[in-house]
Image (cartoon, one colour):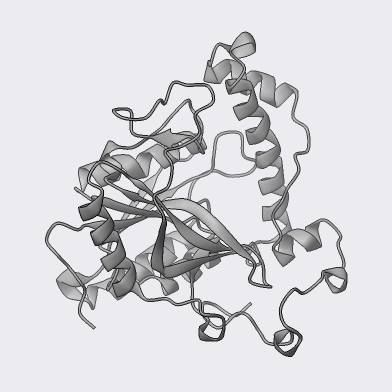
Length: 305
């Protein structure tokens, strides 16, 4: 199938990661040159994350593998751009793929983290139709030339429960993460980004054709402990950023207070790996699927677990 490629559409996937070779492999395996023009990869450990922070050779080999595979697609292949940013904050790394959109003149961005991948399951009506996704993106840009944010369906559990996340951005060159936060974003020209109650530009509906699946099942227990440490820090850090009476919005002050007052946060992830890390017996988890489908394997694509 040829790529639906009007000259005005340049669509990129933006991914931040740190030494997640298996996850990147799973994600790369789920992407297609039919839908994607660029894959922006921003690697390296976050500031204040335990362990060695530079991207390791195993992960670099996965990136090289997909670069070589895309060469077979010629000029229609996905161009894979990798940037190393070890020691940066999450805010800085997410800003980087927006900078890359400006540098490579991409007017559509699909944000996919390394613990996610494009999922397909015909029985449950989760399609992976990159041409349809691309057409939806193109028509959205044409209909709403001043708006950016749209949602995508994201499957949160092995039992296929899902909700919607604002991960599809039109005109990303106009967008910014704001207030030093990784979950606050908008267009400074039209959004009230300095309002303390601002979170993000509202979404204008759901992009169809693609669903994402999220889980941590490819991560080691040590990876999960590092994730928990970082999340405990990040939650406090961004809480302090929102307290001008304590930090005046100064990231260095917020960091100092967060490191001093870290406390366990309420982790709402419902993937099986997180249940195991919490010591929850998976047999006690209620399966909401119809009884005749409960024993069927929900993993029909990607790398087998």
